[in-house]
Image 1 (cartoon, helix red, strand yellow):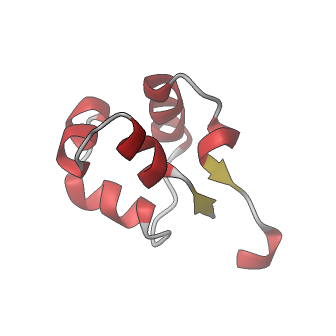
Image 2: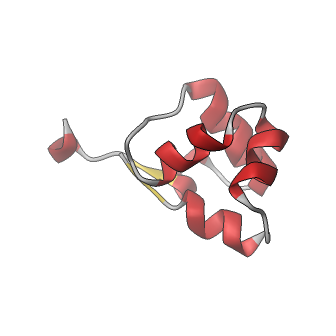
Length: 67
């Protein structure tokens, strides 16, 4: 799944560590999501969207091709 997490994080001037603390995960989890190596749980996706005041679809783009 493609995502724009790094873009939103940069727009809010947050480090990976800062963002991880705000949503209750590790920095490594944020790093893995940004590199598209890990798809977040629905709960985490909602937390990220709420934090940035956007929809989940604004951050994450589902693609059938990546299955």
